[in-house]
Image (tube, rainbow, N blue to C red; front, side, top):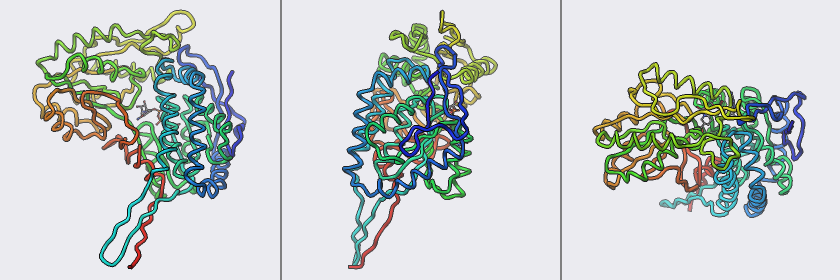
Length: 479
Ligand code: TXE
C-alpha cells in the first residue's frame, strides 16, 4: 500500500483524524494506496502556516520567488517518467499521454508564471492636473481546488500563478487522483520552497474543500470541477465577498462545415472526442456536420473510432486507457442507456470493455458514437465527461449556431471550414470562452482561458491569472 501524507508548514504530516481513504488504480479496479482523510483541523493548520509565511514570501523580490519556482519546474522535468507513471496509475490515462502532455505541462505552468511575474506591469493614467498609477499586490492565502481529469496539470495551473504573484497557498487536489500532488510536495521540499508557502491538504471535497472555501482567512478561491460543486462554492464564498474563479463543465460543439479540410477535421475530431477517455472539459462532445458531407464524415469517423485501441494505460499502443473510477464509469454507461431511450442509434462502442488477466476489473469503456438524437435532448444537453459523442446533421449556419449555443454551458467550440469569413463570422456568434478554428487544444498559456454561462466565472491564464491573484489599488496624485 502506498500511503501519502499532507504537506503542511513544509512537512509531510499525518491527518489529524489518523484516518485514511482508499485510493484506487482504475486500470485494475483495485485499491493500491491510502490518502489522508483530512478535516477542518488540518485545514486550520495549513491556513495558519500559510498566513505566517505570507509576509516573508510576499515581500521577496519577484526574482527570488521566480528562482525557487524554476527549480520546482526543473525537478518536475527531472522526474518526468516517475510522475507520468504515477499519474497514469492514479487516473487510468495512457502513460504516453501523461508523459507527453500532463507532466510537461505541469512544469510549463511553473516556468510560465515564474518568468511571467518578471514582466508583469501595471498601468498609469495621466489626466488633466493629476496622475493615476495602479498597483497589483499579493492578497494573502489563496485556496486552490482542482479535479481528477488532468491532476497535476490543473493543480499547478492554479498554484503557480498564486505563488508567483506572492500569495501563499492552501491547495486540495481531487481525492480521486492525489498522487502527483503528493509527489509535488516532495519536490517542493527538495527545491527549498520555504515552509508554509504551499500547503497541500488531501481528503474529501465536502470536508477539506468546504473547510478551505469557508475559512475566513482565505480571501480568494480558485476552483476547477463540476458545475454543481462550483455552484455550492459560490454560495459559500459569495456572501463572504471572496474573490472567486470558477472553471466548470462543458458540452462543447465541434462544427464541421462541408468546405473543411476533410482529413484534418476527421483526424482531429477523433482526438477531440476521445483524448483522455473524453474526460477533458474541452472535448468536443457534440459533433455537428453539414448535411452534404454527413454520411461521408460519419462513416469515416466511425471506422476510425472502431480502430482505436482500448487497453492498459502502460501499454504504449493503447489509445484509450481506463476512466477514472467505477462510479464515473457507471455514470457514463447510464448516459449511453439514456441516449438509447431518447432514440439514439449507437454506431460504435456503447459498452464496457473487459480486458484480459489482471486488467479484467478495470474501468474501460469503448469509445462511443451516437446519432439520431434531437439537439435538445438530455444526452445532448448534459455533460457526460466520458468517451461518448453524438453526431447531428445541419443545413444552415444559423441552425447550427442555434444548436451549438443551446446548452447551459459555454466553455469551448471548434469550427472546421476553409472559409476565412465563415470562420470569423461563426466564431463571433458562439457563446463560448474559447474557440478553435481548424485545430483543437492548441494552447498558448498567455491567452484567457475560461467559459461563459454555467461553464464558469472569470478567466485563467496569462495576465488574467496574475490579475486574479493580486489586489488592485489605484493611487491618484494631484500634480
Ligand atoms: O468533480 P467535483 P468530480 C465535471 C464532470 C464530472 C463532474 C464531477 O462532469 O463528472 O464534474 O466530477 C472538490 N467544497 N468535471 O466529482 O466534485 C473535490 O474534492 C469544496 C468537470 O470530480 O466538482 C475535487 O477536489 N470543494 C471538470 C474538486 O472539488 C469540493 C473536471 C472537483 O470535484 C466540494 C472534473 C465542496 N463542497 C469534473 N465538493 C472540468 N471542467 O475540468 C467537492 N470538492
